Image (cartoon, rainbow over the protein chains, first blue to last red):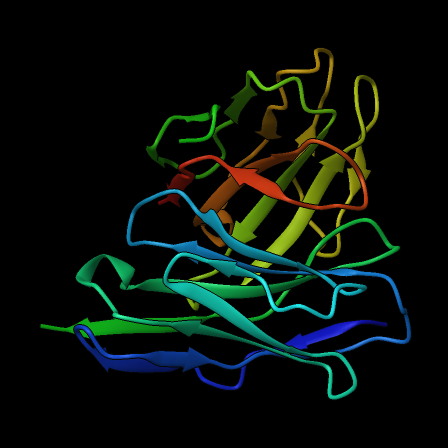
Length: 113
Length: 113
């Protein structure tokens, strides 16, 4: 069975600095998708970034980028130029052949002004 | 903003009451989900649906039931609420199976006294 592990329950970053959130997963599949979702306090969870496993190029979305290491089964999220609005729970998720996403337990990110 | 709506946003009820949490989406998505989010913020899939007249149980056993009579509507019902049902309930939808990019509602925070 696939698993997703986020080893950092909480992280903190200074405004305008860069922070990296870690995620590892376990799977025997070769085709799958990986996601980072953001859940701000009392607000809707939204998709931050998505990576197809067959693509070697790391996905980027403005200040958000990933470091996808397929062999190591690692999928970290880098947030550059952190802003106060980046403070949220961040969930890493795996999507494979079973059809439903498997979520990690989340990392709570605080941004200090 | 995603076009998926949950009502009510907050609900406080007494033990033994029957309740229905509403979820609607206007994106024409076939697949819909209900997640229970525990106080530690971990997400647990409790129900999902592939489309009209399809309902499946998720990874976490739940005493709730769901129905899918219309594509856009996926309500969750608790016949007799108990304090153990106190939780945040998140509804989500996705455009297609496999590429599980999820759109989430704002959630219902349920408190059972």
